[in-house]
Image 1: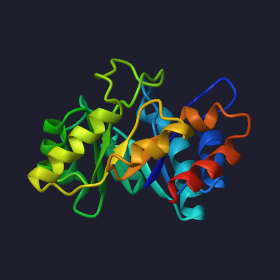
Image 2 (image 1 turned 180 degrees about the vertical axis):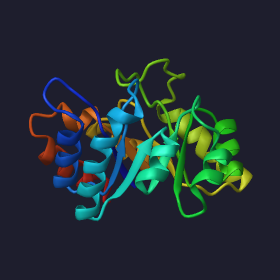
Image 3 (image 1 turned 60 degrees about the vertical axis):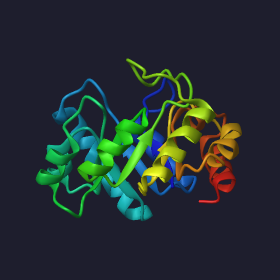
Image 4 (image 1 turned 135 degrees about the horizontal axis):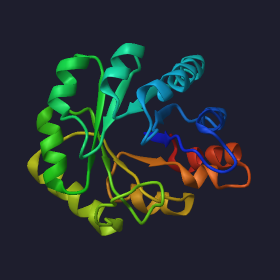
Length: 205
């Protein structure tokens, strides 16, 4: 499970970033636009959804449950201060994909019990794309969370996120996590499409 989180940089807008990720072979896109209104997100989300549909990619919107329902996106990713997963499930129904952000095993357990479909677990290291960063997990943090999940019989996809680069992927995957989410590693590369292809080769996804 390789997820791309859209990002706005000095070189690329949100749709540029999604277009390049899809061209590089990524088939799971999250549109993440913080600190703007739904009205600003809507036209970009409509185009992003169409691009994902044409590429056969899953399209997730960060945080905006009502917009997900309105546009019939595939699902929503909810941060720690966003709408509770159980409430989003009531609004979106059983078929929607709902992901939740976690930093501890307690977070993972709560999301699992609330009916999440996957966990975005991080941050792996410091990342400039996120404000109010939770404690850094690193390799040992993922290993600990995965082992606690196994001991508790919790089976849910867990995706590592937060400042991950191509050189980190092999060691992170060895901890037992299910997938990787990234943004800057692709967009800051000299050739983002080629970098996405390289990352997909590394993950085998």
